[in-house]
Structures are given as structure tokens and as C-alpha cells.
Amino acid sequence: GEEVAQTPKHLVRGEGQKAKLYCAPIKGHSYVFWYQQVLKNEFKFLISFQNENVFDETGMPKERFSAKCLPNSPCSLEIQATKLEDSAVYFCASSQLVPSSGNTIYFGEGSWLTVV
Amino acid sequence: AQSVSQHNHHVILSEAASLELGCNYSYGGTVNLFWYVQYPGQHLQLLLKYFSGDPLVKGIKGFEAEFIKSKFSFNLRKPSVQWSDTAEYFCAVKGFGNEKLTFGTGTRLTIIP
Image 1 (tube, rainbow over the protein chains, first blue to last red):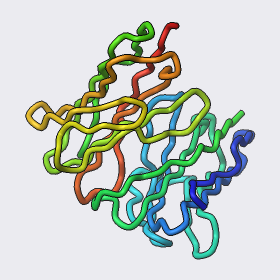
Image 2 (image 1 turned 180 degrees about the vertical axis):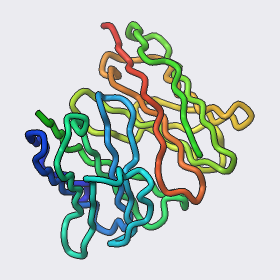
Image 3 (image 1 turned 45 degrees about the horizontal axis):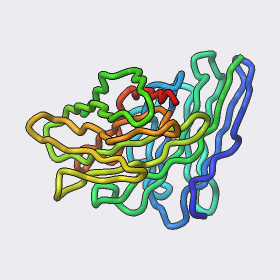
């Protein structure tokens, strides 16, 4: 597709429940990024993939958060045992080849997670 | 580590006023710089980007930004704003060879008709 597709758009979970978000990058893009935006402010980098391999996971909380990008499947971000502070909009982004060469990172519309 | 500062948290202007939003970054090497806009309820859209060459870059919707290396700045400008420019504006930096974007905290722009 020509856009980064994220599902679901909205997700409500009770504290302690699992949340799973999905992202289909733009066709042909080999890099995928996940960002967390809390309260419409700062974008926090979580993790990036080069194809199905983790490229940079320095932003991922060590506990409860995991992500995968498997061949022929949407990428996923999973939060085990959600907490109130996980409430945020989670943005997925993708880029073609190596962003340092000048390629732009395109963002999806985001998945709004509310933990109650 | 790379970082971005946007000192204007909320800017309110009347239509037709000129706009300049500040962006300063911190990074020791070559950088790629971006401005993204987020309209209410929507996702991030790229306004413009600087990778190399002419430090004055022009983007969509009449926006432009100037990369001043000596000041570590990449300020966004528009000569005459419109009500439809009301949105949140994010400056972002990517160090060369580092594939992740680091965002500033954003500037909310409100245009009064």
C-alpha cells in the first residue's frame, strides 16, 4: 500500500490486560519504527526494524513491551499487563532502504491506547 | 546523543501574520532535519526536510526552513499564515548513520481568523 496502515485506531484495556497493535508499512519499505506519543507532546522512540530484524531497541521498556516484524505479516507491538501510564498514541512509521541516504520516514495515523 | 529543543510551546497569531517557529538541535555530527505537522486528530505529515545542499529548504503549503549550522538551528517560517495552519508542529533530527528520529516537544500554533 501507499500508506502506513495501523490497526486498531482505538483500543481500550483494563489495567493488567494485554494490548496488541499492528502496523503494515508502505510496500517496499524495509525499515519500520514505533513511537509513543503521550499527551500530544513528546514522541518517544521505542524500536526500529530492518525487515524482520531488530535494528534499534534502545527505547523499548525492558519489561512488558515486545515487538515483531515477521515476513508476510503486519508488524506488531505488544504490551503485556498494561499500566495506566501506557495510555498514549502509538505511531508506526516506515522508510525505504536506509533513511540516512535521504529517504523520508512516513508515519501512520496512530493507534490510541487507553488503559483504564 | 541527539536532542531537539522547541522553545515556543504555544503560539497564537492572526491570519496573514508572519510565522517563525524556533528549533535548535544538539548533535556532534552531520544531521538530517525535519519539520512535521500534526493537524487536530490526524497523523504526522512531513512539511519539509533538509539533508544537504541549499540550507534554505521549501516545503509544502508555503512553509520554508533555514538550516544555520553555526547556530544549530532549523527554524520554520511562513510569510502569511492561514486559519488552516492551526496545528501542532514538530521539529525532528536524525544524526547521520543513526536511523531514528528524535523529536522536539512540539509547538502548538493557533491561528485566529
